[in-house]
Length: 450
Image (cartoon, rainbow, N blue to C red; front, side, top):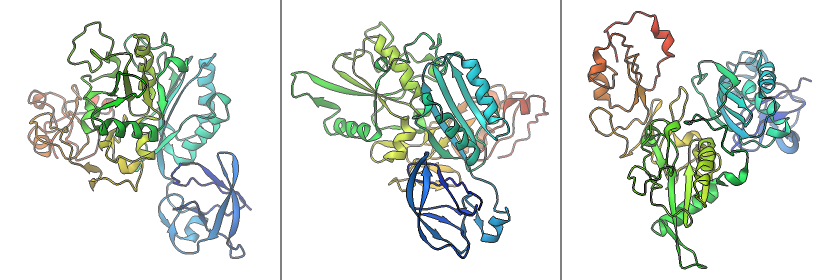
């Protein structure tokens, strides 16, 4: 009997391999596995492999039309004849700081494994580790993760997975050696990021939530019983300002930067810098809670702050995406999460479908009351928390825009751009422009449609 493999949408996002079954598996909604089986097979306890470890599981027969493992409606006959449609696409994110002695050889090994697999995204490797964000059919995408985990250096990496309902979220695969896993002015090869003691202390989402609640209930300060000093908590968003605009932790100040490589919080020698949230902060008695999308930017930047004498540094393990998956937005998070792929923004329910939020969806855009989300052109409130690129090919500025200004300025970010020689058509709603070279040599006209 053919062995079947299926990826189920469990809360912990494990890959489950069901053995000795027909290859027509169905999506589960609980810890019980559903699949189509021969008439002779009876419902019973069985076994499965979760991350290479055997576990017991409830198997039972499902003999009616239902959702198959590919996420589409298929009958038993359709599935057995291989006509059940396309496999669902996912986006996978992970990173690991670890010494890699021969990074070029490591890159070659990864290329060899991924040959023939439908993977697109950014996978960077160097002497300090690996940083990966990619999309692909779930089978190919997760096969790469499992292959990587066979290496002891990456066996316990935190892998974060989100759906890509429109297929690939990246245009191509960039798998290569890169001097800096994260782009910062001057590079990061000189930073002690391989030393855990030099990085901030990682907090699990539950610990992070507890500290946020503690700060909120005590007016952002926590008394230490063994000391006369008052310990302050400072929430530091280590992202770009435009990311903060569509979603952030309550109480975090908007970062005054548009490119992470130019971030300079806590690095100035000036005692008074209104744009720096770490200016005049007591380095010994202030708990600095740093967060970013997936965690890597905080880990890197915390080594810089550690070198500058900041003693009490904490990061959100796995970043915002891990927090939303484990805890949901609750009272702590408001808005969307900006992501650096074609989806641009993800609503909290993407990570935790049963989360208690005040969101409502309109098409593929999230409608949410967030007072900080303002139209770049007129300053009015923006309900759809998703950026768009300027229609001027030579500008391509990323900005928030209300529907009225999209129509009035033909998808451009300024009146000047509306008269640019190379204007792309206005894209409706959530759509995003293709790579610039698609338009570079094409004939562009002033005819615009919304």
